[in-house]
Image (cartoon, rainbow, N blue to C red; front, side, top):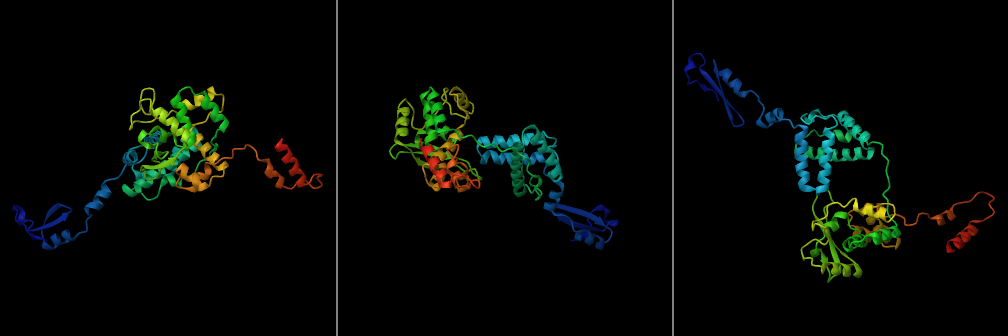
Length: 360
């Protein structure tokens, strides 16, 4: 509200205007009361609007905040993957100090094209997915522009390589090649439980229930990153082997499987491949054994929902991707197809001949 100017310049400016911007008080001198009132009534930006105009989020701020969230919410492996995605993104010509409002879909396209050329289309698509998720998080928590520049970029052409699933015969060849008793036990556990690699790496003796004949697997593979666990029944021979292994001096709360340095395993990604080469079989990984586990159950007509439970999948569609035919060929179905016109052999005759062949 305008009031009389009490200062020394009151003869020249007899009126004083006063207004507040947030918690900041402003005063100004005027010759007339009308001018003071008009100045007080002027619309001026609120503190929130002013902050929005003066403060803009840069790309490195967005990356830092998202990675801080990812480190707390995801597994170490997933966090490292996301951190590498940002490193490669900024190394592709994107300036980290640029404002998020200046990032365009064209810039994203060019940056991901570099990744597609240097690595592969699959790698570029994976980076695109990670960065798009990070942007969506930023829209929610950092007020980033709602239009996602990563979502605008089309997927890159990629060559999808089907995961190699070992045969049971190759698995046993590798199993018999391993010298250490603990390594053989670990490999047998993967076959009997279909566990993910990390699930057995973090398995403790507290997770082994000898009385109820079951083990507990824990994982952190979901969108929110929370830990989950599930008890699975296992066969007697696996429990007997685990009990003999425990009697070698393991303590109740210790890990079941430890390295030669008595430390927890982290990756072991090259160990199994070396053993495969030694056994002269096509190399496969721990996850290939998980697929083999699902395929064996399916070949024995175990219901799909039971396989889903054993694999600890939230979606039945995911379980279906894990099931592979254990036969390389299935020529019996060809009998149902029509032959050439005028063929001497009927469909039934072909079927009988094939049956005799298979019996031999």
